[in-house]
Structure formats: C-alpha cells, structure tokens
Image 1 (cartoon, one colour):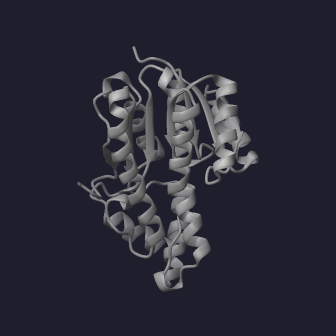
Image 2 (cartoon, helix red, strand yellow):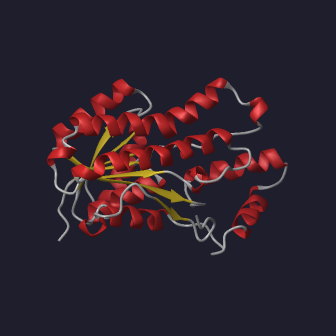
Length: 259
C-alpha cells in the first residue's frame, strides 16, 4: 500500500492542478493547493469538496521567493511535512520575438521556471520532505520543453528549463530516496488552452475553431488530452511502485511527441 502523505500542488485552482488535487485526494493524501486568486481557490475547493476531496487553500504568488517561504511555512503548519510536491503553476506567453517585451519575458520565466526552483528549494530546506518516506516531486513541464513552439519563445525556454532542472535535481536527490520527475503534457483542454488558441487566432488572422482543427490534426490520437489523463501519470509517479523512476521527463500528449 502506498504511504499517505501531505501533497502541495501549486496552481491548484484550475486545469491540471485541480485534477491532480482531485486524484491525490481520492488516493487518500492530505492536499494543499495554492494559487494567486483567493476566489478561484475557494471555488476549486468547493468543487473538489462536492467530489469528496477536502483541500487546504493557500494564496500565494510562487514567482515571489518571500511569498514562497510563507506558503511552505503555512502548508506545513496546516498539514504537516510535505511528502509530495507538484509544481504545476504556469502561464502561456509569446508572440513575435522582435516584439516581445521585457515584462512578458520575465513574467513567463518567473511563473513557469523561477517558481519551480523557489518552491522546490523551500520544500527541500524547510518543508520536511527529507523526513517523509517516499518523497516525491513532480514538475509539470510540457512537450514544449523538448522542442521549440512557434511564436512561443518565452514559454518554450521556460519549459526547457523545467526539464533541465528536473534532470539535474532528480540525480541529486536520488540517493536520498526522493524521486523527482517532469510530466510533459502536449495539448490539454484547460483554460490556458483556450487563451493559447485565441492568441494564435489573432496572430494568424483566423478563427479559434480553425486553430483547434489545425492543432488536433498534429496529434496522432486526434484530440487534446484531458487534465485527468495528465493527473493520472502524476498520481502514479507518487506511488511506491514508481520509486525507480526519477530524473525523467515523461510525455502525455497523444503521440504528438515521441522523444
């Protein structure tokens, strides 16, 4: 039987993060979710409660190291040492590289990459993960962390960084019994996916429906993955049976990438 632990899920108020919280809660783990918007967190907690999953909600901007320190402290105070960390918080962002602003570049890198470092560092140093059996860290990267995505240089760069960080730190933590992996979704139907299609529709002067058709045509499975399909792999990586899987970047993408 898999040991039950306290799981902290960043970006847990919607999409993949909320699906991960549901999966881990259903598995019996104690779950804390965090996000920037307290109202969205309350709404997610209510929805999860209706599905039989109770979560602790913690508001924080994980791109801010001071807020991360406070977040981890509050999570540990509420639910004890963190045995599972899922770094899921992320955002889209891109456009023509010559037209990218410094602000957009920093915001995308801060949310998608810096946050993974800040939260991981804090959980390793003060979150108690070394005191828990079968510690697990799962970073939500992207297939964009393995190949470049057109008109998405900041996003691609940030997710490549997450994959590299995972491979390096996964090797560092393996002797300590903590497994660390990246899960790399392809196209997943989430609120962020809607924003991405809208941005491409504007850039290509076409409709969101046409963008969706073009994207689905690239996927051998013929459709977007679901948040629960991504969460299913995250859940597996937290189990004792996955103990020898570490420092890997695993795709959930319907065959979009096979590398």
